[in-house]
Image 1 (tube, one colour):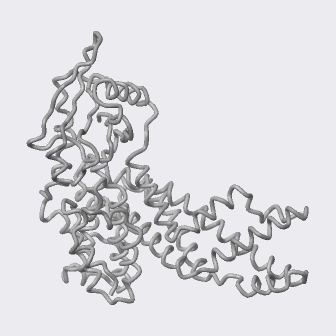
Image 2 (image 1 turned 180 degrees about the vertical axis):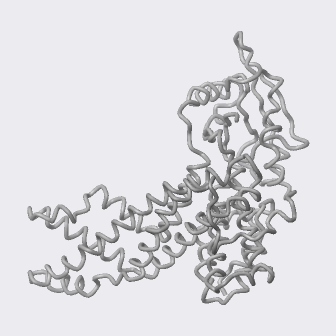
Image 3 (image 1 turned 45 degrees about the vertical axis):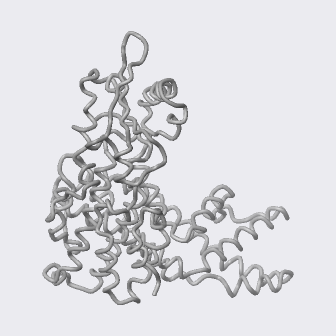
Length: 432
């Protein structure tokens, strides 16, 4: 695959766009492909700059200028589908077995590694559901600051709770590490997203289970204000003990650096979802160290021949996993969930109502990830996700079971409030 410079916009020329070549000085006669984006901007509503830039083939160590059409050959297939919605109408019309899918021999290694994390996720949810907090003990300790017995009771009540909070936080990193393993397989360029999901249903199910856990954890966390109260009290008490040269139990103490990171984690309304979104974004946009020389040379060329402003804000996309592979996988999964929920033939295969809620959570989860990863987001007219259909499916469920999911779309997506979001979609997401 070819390295790629990207400024956050979809890639490659559209019909009607202009292309000119600028030769760089020197014996190599390196050519630069600069694609005018006036036509493209009308399709995807991007107005922040006028040019889209592709790395020249010779700079990337490949063939000379006649191969500069690699953008079209290598990337345009998925891009055209994204921009024109020219996707197979039956692409999402297969049943994804969220209840009983078992790993094939080719899935086994990844499945077993991720399964360890998912097994622990059940324990995490159970502990979070049983989290009662130390509100009463803390209240008494604040009211009676000079009573040592009251202070000791509050401290004894808070310590095991902080240990739990530390466990939750550390688990978020395990989740963050397991996600790329799944995405690497499910977004492989070996086959279209529909085939990947259909043929690797056990891994697709694990991805769905991660999304289910993520939204469920955040739903529960938002109903437990004691979490932040307990941790704030812990930090205040630790600071006071240090000032007074009192020794805290070293096995239980969360050091200051870790405490700062945990505070930021729990300050977020949806901490697990943020972790997952960040991990997905990192997966599709990781800077690869071997391409640093390409990046430096390319920015110099842009600054020299065009405008210095054009050299700002460009990053190197992971050449092994085009962003379209990931966004296509996410949009296909959203489509599959929507179809299964709105088609009686498929929905009747669910053995419990809990599977319906599971499917709804997965649909919302992949929409949110798509909105964070795709440059234009999930709500634009050119999105391959049928947002109106997905919202309609949510609205048809009992309000008590989906209000949290609707709130997730309202408040944790990235592009809902963009000017490119159709007014009808905004209205559909308005609270009743």
